[in-house]
Image (cartoon, rainbow, N blue to C red; front, side, top):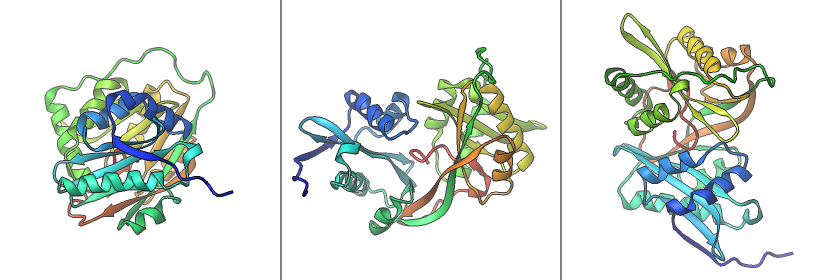
Length: 290
């Protein structure tokens, strides 16, 4: 039976829409919380959108700009009952048009296999592959005792943010600092002789703790950061979005029980003038943030 045309309206997302956003990502099995939606709204108040049908929020998209270098598009969600009606494409186009209006020439996103051909039609091309791996720990094996958070002084945080800018390709210190403030117990750093060799942060998601990001060029340091994170996390489920092309990444995840969940493709539209250093990325911040 042919579907009846929908009266769809789109508008800028506001703080009052956060609960609707969480409902949508929950129905999709995504791990974001209200805190993640607030990160978007606080840093891109005019660049997040909702689609409504009869006053009900049935879809979302969000953007976040990193300096004037590039912007990220994420959280393209549509309620299951309203999929395949063009809502997702319309919300994606809203995000692209917003970034075009404010003069952002480079846009990036992480695409699922289903979304990849849609993004390709809009001018996005592959940059590199990402894989999500998940660890499911048996109940009772993790500590339920509250973990003390790591204290980072200004100098340490500044060094982390400087390295993160170099590796990611743009300044996102507002996100890095937010991660530490919200979950200091999941912050892990590796120093040798007073020099920063690597760092890892984490997010407490809806159903899992998310190792994000994890940065180092030294496989042994990466293993230390992963082990520290697992010891600090009290959740049974842990997720990691990693670059499988980087040496030893998959072996280190398999060794502690992680299993492959799904593939993603990082895609870019426009000049990729600030690619960062992907070879140092053991885990990304997340498909929604980059």
